[in-house]
Amino acid sequence: MKAHYFVIVLLLVSNITSSSGFLDMFVAAASVVYKYLERDDLLPFDSKRLEEDLKENFFGQHIASNVILRAVSTFMTDSKPNKPLVLSLHGTSGTGKNHVTKIITRNVYEKGEDSKHVHTYIAMHHFPHKEKLDLYNAQLKQWIHGNVSSFPRSMFIFDEMDKMHPQLIDAIKPFLDYNTRVDGVSFHQAIFIFLSNTGGSIIAEVALDFWRRGKIREELWMNSKEMEIKISQNIFNDKNSGFVHSSIIDEHLVDHYIPLLPLELKHVRQCVMVEMIHLNITNDDDLADKVAKDMPYYPDKENIFAVKGCKSVRQKLPQHIDS
Image (cartoon, rainbow, N blue to C red; front, side, top):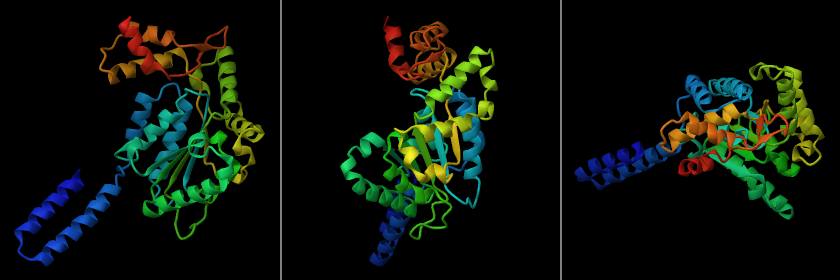
C-alpha cells in the first residue's frame, strides 16, 4: 500500500513540471521504488511477538514451541548464518504441523503465508508422476535457486515430506548445506520447513506411555526417553519414506527434528475457544466442552488423544450452535 501512495505522489509531482525528461526520471524512480517495496515484506523480527503468538495459538505443544522459538529467533537475529535454517516437523495428522508453520510465516513476513516469498510444495500434488521425476527435479532446483537469488530470506515449505521421492529430496540437498554459494547464490538466509507424519506413531507411543505412568505431559522433553533419537531412527527405518533413501539425514543437514505430541481434550477445547473468536461467537464454556467432547479420541480404553487433533473444529462448531 505504501508503494502505491509513493508512486501517486511521484506522478503528481512530475505532472507539475514542464520537462518531459524530468517526468521520465520520476516515472523510472517510481518504478524502482515500487518494485523494491512490493517485494520486501519482511517484518522486523521480534522474538517476544513470536513467543506470544505460540503461547496464544499453539496448544499442547510445549516441546515444539520451545524448539521453534529458540531456533527461529537465533537464526533470524544472526547477521551471518553459516547455513539455511532447516526444521523437520513430525507428528500424526491434526497435531498442528501446518498451523505452527503459519505462525512462523506471519512472524517473518507482513503477509504471512500469503507472502510471495513463502513457497509451499505438497508432494502428491506438485510431484504426482514418477515418470516426470527428471522434469520435477530440474524445476525444483530452478524454483529454489531463482527465488533465493531475487530474495535471500525466502521460505520453502515441503508438506508430505515422507511421500517425496528421494531423487527430489536430494535435489534440495545442495541448498541446505554449508556451501558458501550454489551457482553464485548464497542460501544461508533461507528457511526450509519439512512437514511429515513419519515418527508420529513413535511420538504418540512415548506420550501415551508417559501418561500411563502418571507423568505430567509438560515434563516430557526432547531428551525424555531420547525422543529425538527415536524420531530419527524411525525415519531411517521407514522403508516407505523418501527420507530413508536420501542423503539429507546422513549428512546431518536437518537442524532440528521437532516432535508434535498428540492433542488431548483440553487442547481441543482451547482450539474451540479460538475458533469462537474467529467466528465472532460469544465465549461459551459449555459449548466449547460439547464440541471438544464430540471429537473422536484414542486409544479405545483410555480415550486420551484426539484422533484428528483440532482439525474439523471450525466445521463442528456451527453444527452445535444450530442444534
